[in-house]
Length: 340
Ligand code: UD1
Image (cartoon, rainbow, N blue to C red; front, side, top):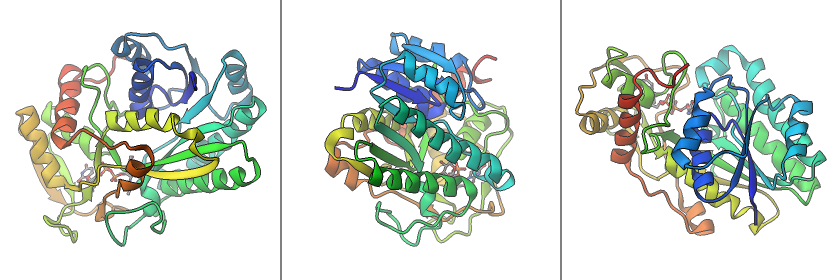
C-alpha cells in the first residue's frame, strides 16, 4: 500500500487540487515546486481545504538533481506524481528551448533521482494535445499522435522516453494520463486557477470577464467545422482530474511498464456553449466578440474515456454546470487571485 507520494508542481492548478484529494484520502504528501508559475499561498490553502498538513513542501526545481535527491533522502517516497512543467502552447512556440529543458530535462532528471533512490512508481502528467489536429473525435489512446507545437511535442517525447526506459527497467511502473481541458475549482472556494498575467485559456478568461477584470472575451473563430462554428473541447472538472490521479496511484501495480490513459468526460462543449453555461452559473454577463482563429488551434478535441473506465471502474462525475459554478465561486471570492 502506497503511503507517501511526492507531487512535483504541487502548488499549481492541477497539482494543488490533487494534493487536497490525496490528503483527504489519508496519503502523506510531499510537494516539490519552484513556483515559476504557482503561488506559495496555494500551499497553506491546500492544508486548510484538506484539514490536514502536507508532510513537507520544498522550493526546488526538478532539474536540480542534488536538491531533489535530498528530498527523496528525507522521505519514504512510494510513488511520484509529476506535474511540474511549462504548459502554455503559444509561449512554447516562442521559447522551445525552455520547453524542452523544463519538460523533457525535468522528467529525465526526476527519473534518474527516482532510480537512485529505488522509487519505481510514477504517474505522469500528459496532454490531449499530443493528438494534434484530430482526424476524428472522440479520441482513443490508440489514435495517431501528431503534436502541432513544442509544448505538445515535449509531452509526447516524455511519453516515448518513459516507454523506452520501462522496456529496460522492469521495476518501473508508469501511468501517463492525457488530460483534456481541466477547468473549475475546489468547491471550498480557496483553491482555483490563478494564471499569471492575462489568461491564455478560455475558462479563466471568461471568469475574469464575469468578475469585471477583463472587458470581453475574444472568441477565436466561428468558422470551424463544428455545430456552432466555435472550437469544441472536452472540459473536465479539476477535481475529477485530481480524483483520477488518486485512483491511478492504486492501479500502478496492476501491470509493469508504461500505460497511457485519456482523462476526459467524453462530452464536447463549444466556446459559445461554455460562455452561456458560465453566464448562467454566475448570473453575470459575459460579453464576447468573434475574432480570427488563434494560430495552432484545432477544431475539436474530445476524449473517449472508456479505457480508463474499463481498467479502473472509474468515471468523471462532474458536469459543465459544476465546472462553471466552482470556477465562478473561486473567482468571486478571490477576484485578484491568490495573495502575493
Ligand atoms: C491547450 C492545449 C492543452 C493544454 C492547455 C493548457 C492544444 C490542442 N491544447 O488547450 O493540451 O493542456 O492548452 O494550456 O494545444 N478560446 C477562445 N478565446 C480565448 C481562449 C480560448 O475563444 O481567449 C478558445 C480556443 O480557440 C479553443 C477553446 O477556447 O477553442 C479552448 O482554448 P484553451 O482554453 O486555450 O485550451 P486549448 O487550446 O484547448
